[in-house]
Length: 130
Image (cartoon, rainbow, N blue to C red; front, top):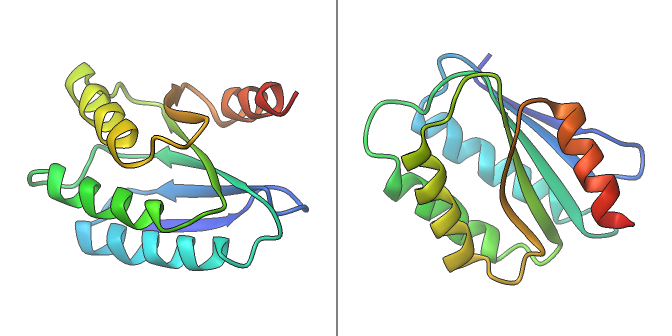
């Protein structure tokens, strides 16, 4: 399994993404493009829950993350990105990703939030919706 995505709810307001073992940066970029294309047909604003099943692919992640975040800027119905990982994400990686999200997506009400489980991310989304 490289990168998979699907709607997490029947109303198409939450997109689930799983970044699996063996995902390359090319897989990641193709996946992000497909996800954003699918989101463009959603009838309302969408949250994305990204579940990382592995560490980032080898190589410098900054240009890859900058590229995907720049693409997200062009997606007007993106409401927020929630990161889920069963493994620890380094403090440096969190800091860099938070910085990039705030820099490129300042309009999002929620950015750079990390959770231990998908259920925790869903709970946070429900609270944000009020």
